[in-house]
Image 1 (cartoon, rainbow, N blue to C red):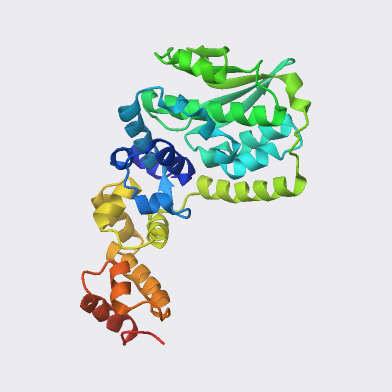
Image 2: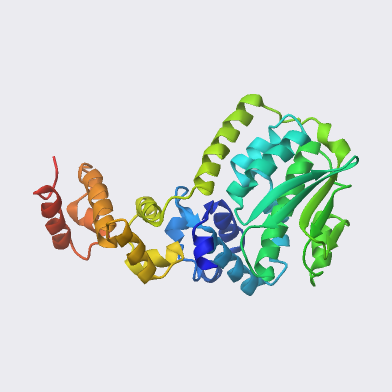
Length: 332
């Protein structure tokens, strides 16, 4: 399962939101990050990449810390803004039908653990959520609760009214926190369903969005299309390692740390990189060289400070690397 989850890139937005919303003490933040391989610096970096494996590990930490109903404690976290370009494209669509089309086409970009399909009857439309990976129910249930709360919130935004008439189905036995789920989603929450789904009245489909904006909608959809291509055609392990090294704000990662972030063993990391004709040390060295060249051209940074930022034990070791890379301590 870990290798499957590691191959799916995951937006860091939800990871960051959960850490910020629930990590109100240093101890809790550390516990939420435990075992994920994500550092505080990476969580703060908007350009950092994580995998679905790392997101699922965080969800497991949340269940251990706060119990099964934790995702329902702060439902306002899952408002349209938390879904990035998906939320923007949804609320700026012409109507509810356009919103649902956006969700069907692009939800996988933000949440690659499910695929959404749509079925329609004379009086209703149903959005089904099929899991794409094998995850324990205790982990996928809070993830699905977040997904369905997100749908409810974005529908309420476009309808400018409560979502009475929507029915939320969960494909699991009724949990102990079912009353909490109904308090958030409404009375029409059904457990033991054949599939996770949301059913809405067909009459809603033609309701115009008060936030419809063709230009903003087109821009958000274009961003989603680019992201979908990246998720649907993930790069190989070497590309993911190179991207991870590029996004580190400072310091460096060992091969063991990188393997953990990729959700693979160190042996697998070494073997897969060797198949592409490169070793981990070569990739790290190439990235350090690129970053060093950029920093050395900044006259405000001392040699000692650059050495520290690049993770060298002392300036002398960094100077030796510079002579190897550039033939001098500072490139011109």
